[in-house]
Length: 53
Image: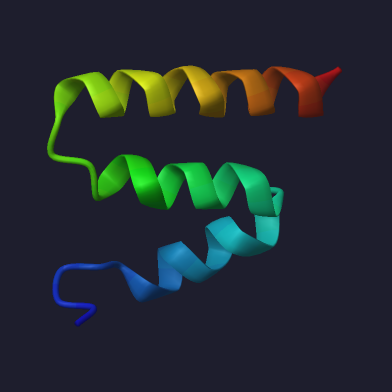
């Protein structure tokens, strides 16, 4: 199931980033549609900006 998934890096991301960001990232990576990806990117950017503030 995790074929092609960098498990180590994935675990690191979960540790470094808030759960919401990781969830959005996972959804984004698994979305084949460009529109869905764009939407996801906006969501992650929003999360990152809010977390940075």
